[in-house]
Length: 353
Image 1: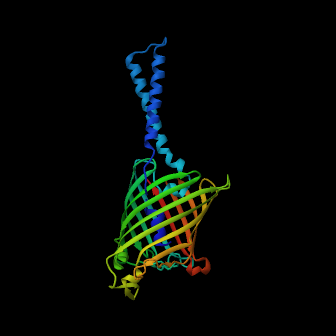
Image 2: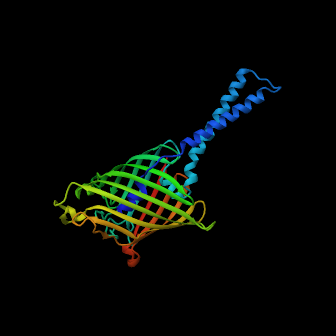
Image 3: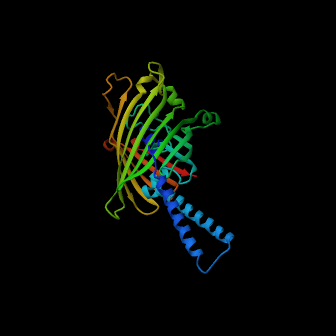
């Protein structure tokens, strides 16, 4: 999975305001209606004490407001029915913890190898396996808008460290970020918009001079036919990166040195079509393809000249443990060059608390 896809699918989040006022106005109207009915009823033959009436009225208003709040909260799941997107966009609670865990491993002929080939040729991609976890504090601004502040921890080549010193040296705090997400629906089309920024702290990113990235993405998804279980969509992503090195000589691979700028992309965009098949309430099959992924090399003087990454395909099995827990073991490969030693393996887990 490329850096751009991982930014687009897991951390960045976008734009907008919600329909809070509608839900609250409904609550007021319902409450007023209830009070009117209560008043008419109280003038009937069954007179009650003032204390009892006040208690019942208070309980009634509370029930109406609770129902309105519940309706507002449930709106997110009415807009987004895709299980992976639900988990990735977070819990329905006002405050929550968004966590993710991943193992980006080697290849099919060695899933636990230290090397993870850069099969797409994306700039600035570290060709090693790693085990990572992230923790984000998420605030639900409204039923459809949320903001997340997070940071992660990763361990490089986790199955090759033979001593405590090796393990300690392979740990990195990973790239804190702030993101914003908006959910919406355009007729039958589910929409998740994201925007955010990442500050780079890992040894690899700082080695090649990467400082920060601004990114935005738009995911659109719709069901194909009725009761077919098929869903099709597209992920659109753009990003811009900023660097503090250019001509400095750095180690770009083990024992290989070059100018920092050879590993840098300053901006780019990608189009990732995907298809899902829902097997049942627990499992779904998913495939996504990086078909049109372009980067502008920092060394390229013409701002309109882009290099195209190799087209890649990812296939995986989605496992919906609960609404807020989603597992996704997957494979990534180049369709024109399928081989055991060029097919990367990985697994991610999204857990919202």
